[in-house]
Each structure stands twice: as C-alpha cells, then as structure tokens.
Length: 146
Length: 146
DNA sequence: TTGATTTAGTTGCATAACTAACTATATGCC
DNA sequence: GGCATATAGTTAGTTATGCAACTAAATCAA
Image (cartoon, rainbow over all chains, first blue to last red; front, side, top):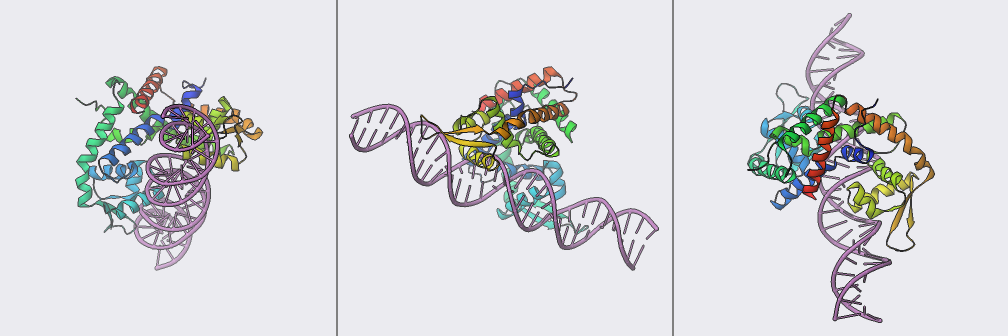
C-alpha cells in the first residue's frame, strides 16, 4: 500500500515548496530593506564560501545542490559584483577556485543576522521538537531521492 | 530569545527548499519518462483546474501562491500547448476564465498517479505522524510570513 | 455624472533553473 | 606513448520567478 499520507491538496504545496518559498521571499525582502543587492541564490553560494573559502565550482555544486550551469552563472554574477574571484588551481588546470573578496567577507555577519531574524519570524509558535522532526523528514526525503 | 532552532548549515537548506526541490525534480523526471511534456509549474496550474475548472487568473494566483505575471506566462505556455483556453467572463470584462481543454482533462489521472508514486518514493521510511507535523509546520510558517 | 481608486491582466527587464551539447584537461589502460 | 574515458567548466535554448510600470475595466464617492 502506497505511502500517500499527503492528501492531494497538500501534495502540491510540498512539491512546490510553499513554505520554503515564503521563507526565501521574506529573506530576499529583508536583504533589500537592509540595502543588500544580493539574491538568495547568490547568498547561498557566499554562505558556503564563508564556511570554507576557495572551493571549486564542482564543490559548490555539491554543497548547494545546484548543477554546473547554474553555478557557472551564479559565479558570473557574483564576479560582476566583485564579491568573488575565479582563481585557477595550481595543481589541476581544469579547476577554478572561487574565492571571496574583502567586500564579500564583510557581508557575512549582516546576512547571517538577517537570515536568523527571518527564520525567527518564520518559526514563531513552532515547537523545537517539531522543527527537529521537519529536519529529519527533509533529510530522509532528500536521501530517498538522491 | 530568538527561535533559532535551525543550525546554520540546515538553515540554508530550508530556505532553498532542498527537500521540496528534490521532490519536484523527481516528479519532473517521472513526467518525462511517461512521455509528458508539461513542467511541474504547469502541472500545478492544471491541478487546481482539475479540482475546479474555469478559474480566473487571479484565483489561480491565490491557489498556486504565484504572482500575476507568473500566472500570465504559465497560461500563455499552457495555451500554446492547447491544454487550456482563456475565456472572457460574461459578467466582468476584466476577467479571463481559464478553462481546461479535452486533452488536458485526459491527463489528470496519469499525472495524479505519477505524483502519488513520486511522493511514495520520497516518503519511504517516514512515519505518518511525522508527515502530519511537517504539514502543520509548513502551514504555520506560511501563515507567519503572509 | 464625473473623477479617483481599486482590481484584473500584460509587458519589459534581470536573475535563475534544467537539458543538451560543447571544450579543455586529466586519468587509466594497452 | 597514445587512445578511450572521465571530470571541470562553459554556452545555448527554453521555462520560470520577482519587480515595476503599464492598460483597461469596474467601483466608489462627491
């Protein structure tokens, strides 16, 4: 018997990421209000570079769950804004290392604060245990499909 | 004290809809393998029309959580594929009623089956109670932000 | 009735996604 | 060494999203 616990009307909203879309839109809005010109997608790349700088584009694909063309263009746009720089790898000439510039390094704290604030707004009235369950389910779904 | 129960590394995946993106990608793949040419976004419009045919574009905006330009273009593309037809409302000349064509009506059962099958694959090993909690959290997050 | 406001929908512009096809470099095998 | 294969990244084409500015029709109020 299939595991169809989502009713039809709800199925759709899961697939289309109703809740996560709403969170992303709010964060984008909060970025704009703070005078930040970056998109959520650009931020997600910077986010991984703040954790570990100078990753290859392929590594950014893995960590952001994006394909190669998407990363190519995100890096293009981030480079236009002088937030990252492509550096050729010294050991493998196929590889570009994507490194943060000084201005990008300075954005880290502000954007993390805005992201935390956005999640706080989103999670008002949600119990910690339930959040843990959501995280587990997300991970399980992701693992089931990849 | 802020409600930051998501740790940093997980925060991002919620905002970018890691899990729901994976589900959407799998469903798109299943559509393609079944020979269906429609996108997930187009399907989400058809989905609401199967529940209730001949909705206005504004009503489709509300039900699919999309803005007006997005719906305009989704309808444009669905019309190109002869899956829907814009019909002028008889009582309000500003309104287009978006109605299903016969070919679109025939797609309903197949796509619902594929969607259910996809959700089954995604939800292997996930408890029904946990799914209910996810749904509640999603709704709460959505309500908090809109 | 007319003039302001609201509502429904469209268009233009920028960014981003996926697929497929491509180039260039590295690796592995004979 | 030389050829097949795998890996890193780019480009082109289509679809979709968000925002701002726009047109047309309906509504509301003086």
